[in-house]
Image (cartoon, rainbow, N blue to C red):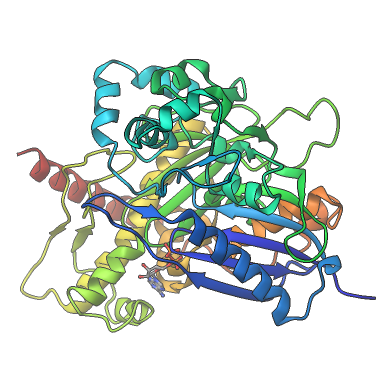
Length: 503
Ligand code: ADP
């Protein structure tokens, strides 16, 4: 019998990757290629859509060649992508009218400030689950329409199409036959009504975006088209934005399941089930990648998630390594932490770019408190590593408060999740069971699961859950008193950092 695989296309901010998974959810092969970041002005970030297409198709070909897989051995393709990044192209020629404007790009910050001043914040939140920000696609599309000569007229004549990166890839994979996005990506545009599950006419009107540019919105799991780009006909059957794909890859299928990613930044997603939870503490409400509908009734149902982010997570470890030069590598931070029994009362608040949920203070700066004559390098390193856990606990508490769910288990992934000291400390201060999966490539795995479930490669959730292996679990080793004391110290440090920002 020939082996069959699911192909995951993982289109990230700095690289395009393709991973082929087998039925056990194991990585059979993986090929990755970086592509250039374009910085036309300070604070502006762009990608060349042609580079994204070329690298993504290239790594897909490369992965198949690496194991000599024929197209008939690829059962389906799943796509996961950097979210919010915006492309506008000509429907007839497929040519982009401008570079892709990347999620990080701040060029429309003033436009968003104006929107807030005009009193739109509550309305945006109620409709989209988001807080107005330049991060999301809406103001980026408007910028292209307003600033690229002739583009607004072409858009109004119905000649242009908008897409996030999933949409751009699917359009190209199907030679322009399919113009779709999925619910998870749509929910990050700030144009999608997450309750009615449709594009919001009022928000499109506010930004002057014609409805004819917008893709059809489909469930994350289901055949949406076929590609012939790899020498045979292969269904494209799964799509989700990167964070939602990661939650799905962690098998976060039911309400109460939560994952947190310790990458350069940190991202936490809590599945809240079929009802959206609207939070007022800076968390965003979004649509989760949802299992394919089992019956007619659940066909148009989606699951929702609460999302929160930590701006600086692994980046704080990079700071220790690259600026302070007190650890030689990120993994070496773990050894350093274990050289001392505690931080000696030191707290590091790594608010290098302000503080996110639940504090929301863009003026906050990184701060170190409680230094004495006896403070050593190891204390400082340990306090920095611990700060990743404290920030994660703050998000977790915000999620507990908003959802009323007593979260007891946390699925982890991302580079810094490899740090055992950090994982144990997280378990201690969050009084939670930390679960690190066997397959750390949860984003690509989530896209593969969504696609594989749609074509019957995996039959149902139970079939997928059989693949969910655990690398290591961590359980709380400290008592309530010690936990409370540590958290009190952290809160005090955050208060002090915020007070510095106010002055
Ligand atoms: P991204 O996808 O955001 O690029 P990754 O998930 O690859 O991030 O994680 C990389 C980050 O994790 C880096 O910021 C690095 O400093 C941090 N990191 C990697 N290994 C460790 C470790 N053992 N301990 C602490 N931090 C680590």
